[in-house]
Amino acid sequence: MTNTKSNNEKVHMELMSVEGNFNIREIKDQMLSIIELPYGKRKNLRMYVILPDTYDGITKIKQNLTYEQLNDWTDPDKMKKEFIEVCLPHFKIDSTYSMKNVLYRMGMTYVFSDTKSNISEISDESLYVSDVINLVTMQADEDGTEETTNADDEFGFLSLKLPQTTYTADHPFIFIIRDLLSKCFLFYGVFQKP
Image 1 (cartoon, rainbow, N blue to C red):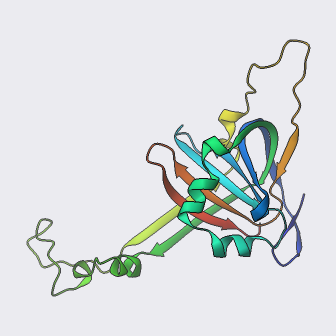
Image 2: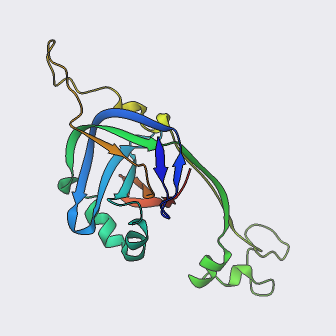
């Protein structure tokens, strides 16, 4: 399969595909569509793929995306369940991020100071935190969608249910992991290129 990057460069890549009943929503005024996929082994995690209609539409979506918009776009009452074929690239992210500046801006300042830090509950020695490192591993592969491969028992012995549509993410898209129990967005990323 050929993937079109945001600069219109064509790149060959392998796509994984699965057929099943998925929540999907098309937002015409924003020129995008969203699909909800199960993620990982826990039943309460979902991955949302936000796919612009055009290969270069990702920049506009990223610039204007808000928390309120995400909540609205992923509202299950506004999504429609359809039997479709989903084609996504395999991808994996392994990265580390320093959280010191983020936590400092949020008001967590004393813990990083060797003179003001008070972590006396941990040790009798004078301790302070030099940095907080966030290790990120995120993977999208067949394991994230394996629970959806069984079609619902909505068809009889002599009928064959074929997908009405195909959702193919063959250009840059946004992906979000959400915990349905807490309703928290746990991870946000952009797939740019294979």
